[in-house]
Image (cartoon, rainbow, N blue to C red; front, side):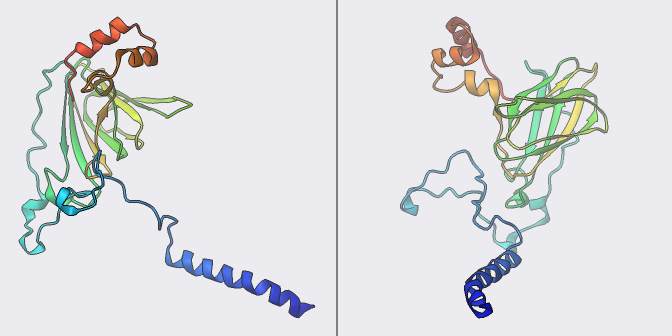
Length: 234
């Protein structure tokens, strides 16, 4: 009887040993995971002659790489915030610092005008963000996805840090009487920025006004008015 049980269990023992070897060799359960896209669109073509864009950027000959490829200067210089929103965002990606290519990082400086400068509700489709305030007082927050729509908000003062999770709508609003400055680190070399109002009301071509009216519980005339406004990107 023991011999029969041993024969019955042998295939399962072999399977367990195989799974153990696989998990030991691949410590993370993402061996079949697709790499994150680094742009909004990358349409497939059958032949390379029809397209040359890659998911990221081409690599420089290592023999021609210099320290300047990893360097940027001037991020300490205050930015102008004399616009309708009172905000200026300087985002450093692989376009600004070529050495960031494939590193999965980008850095942003956010300047917000006194008394109401606003980095409006937006999200980064390809990155989480950690935000460090060095000057001023901000009301910041993010909102969770369906179905909860829960707001996580906080008032920040100089030296405070706040995290905005991947893909969630978030904002920064200057509630202080002087200009505010913060720095954001994002875990993508091209995080993307989708400003909620700009995207919906400033789309080209325009979204049908009936669609937006129903979605926002507005009348069509109000939607058409909003669509005519000069929507500004931060």
